[in-house]
Length: 279
Ligand SMILES: [Zn+2]
Image 1 (cartoon, helix red, strand yellow):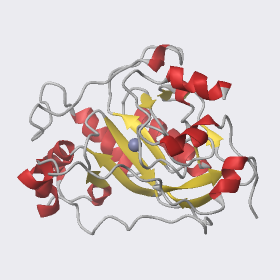
Image 2 (image 1 turned 135 degrees about the horizontal axis):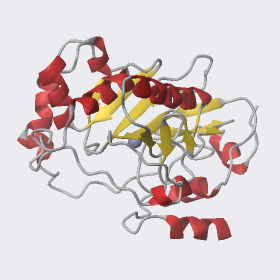
Image 3 (image 1 turned 90 degrees about the vertical axis):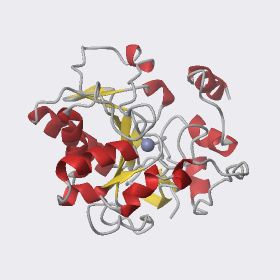
Image 4 (image 1 turned 90 degrees about the horizontal axis):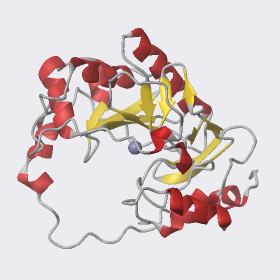
């Protein structure tokens, strides 16, 4: 309980507990030891044997480590490290790595509906050189939106070719399922480079104007892990992208949306939360 209180204090002021069922998952300090094993999906799942990305490494700095959300399947850690290495080789500065997963996965009390199975990582869309810093100094960093007011296009004052390079490198990560970016960012990528296979993995989503969301497919041998349907064929530079700029996509629903409901986790996740490794 003491730990939970500390966690709440560590949250940024604007973070709200929107999903109280995530609180027990956020309160566990560490993973369940054992071979890595994912149960369920990124929207309703948990993980055993998760590993923690260290606060710094070659080509990356973890951001807001006090949230204790830099855990994931070893394949995710490998993907983040590999992306950092390839970004460095492409002349990009160190990456800022935001939220990944909780030590045992599961739903989060605020911030993300997914990120539950150790397969998601938020990478900030910031290509400025990063001075050496402590994890504590990175608790409060902010990155401005890359999207112009109105949401139709990227902000020409901020968007640079290096941002496109970084999204492309993420979309070329082995084992990638999707890289979620703001529709205006996807539109800009299509404008410059429609056609290449990597663009299929870059999908538009609300928000994501200052970070991208890297999601992996279930790693090999993870029988209890379920994937989302793969992205549709093609580069996605089509009517499905145009929809995001339509009145329908931008008009709020007439009635307040149903309050979020707890995800239906696999039954064995209760044991995972309790700290045991289910057979
Ligand atoms: Zn995310």
